[in-house]
Length: 135
Image (cartoon, rainbow, N blue to C red):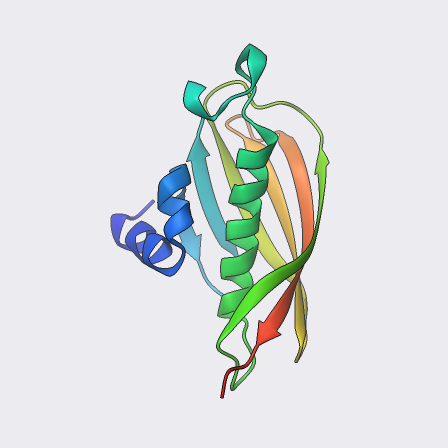
């Protein structure tokens, strides 16, 4: 985890600072973010809120898509996102690992795995990012 990379993440997507996401590594082939478990991010019973998990995955996927923008594109926007929750996160942290599935001229599809501190798959997210072009 680097403070400089996390600062870049927060500058690019201010919402990631609000939720407490930290950057582990970032590039065209892979983006890895981390969110620490905290009781303020939980539902009843100490389960990390599904919305927090989805926000982390969307942020990782969006940043991954950004690193894969075709020439002339200026950004991306999530158009679809499908999440499968597989196990609860009740402590430690969750890591999001986003990788491109398909990089096109108008859309980029990203697959993101969310793993708990023990490396167990907690959720899997597939999202489509629209490629934005501004004159």
